[in-house]
Image 1 (cartoon, rainbow, N blue to C red):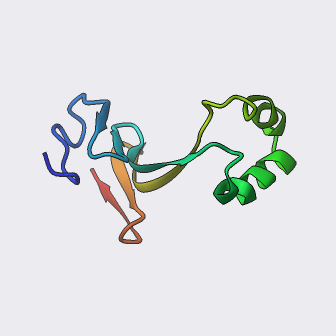
Image 2: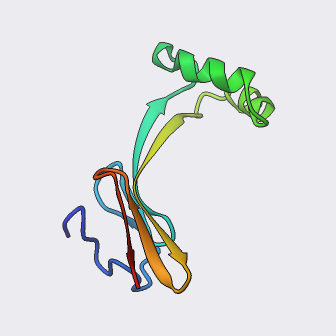
Image 3: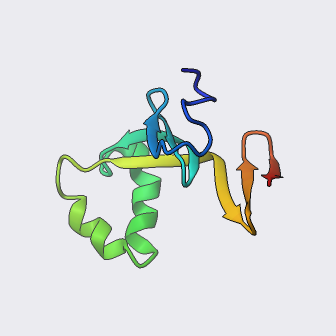
Length: 103
């Protein structure tokens, strides 16, 4: 199976498929690239941890759970997002900077 053409792509009932390590396909969302960044207290995560502790409605949850040693930060980047709209399927391709519609 190629990374850009999972079995059943698109719309054959395959809801969740791991393509390669770090790539994930979800029929309702699209292609996501996932990278585990490690524990929030690591030096390389200092900037995002500081932001999360100061901003947003989830800052109390972040503060509560970051004390556990098995918590990790995960960076998620969308490569391709699919949407159903007005009887057709729309695609937002972030790697190519294009949007297109089928149907």
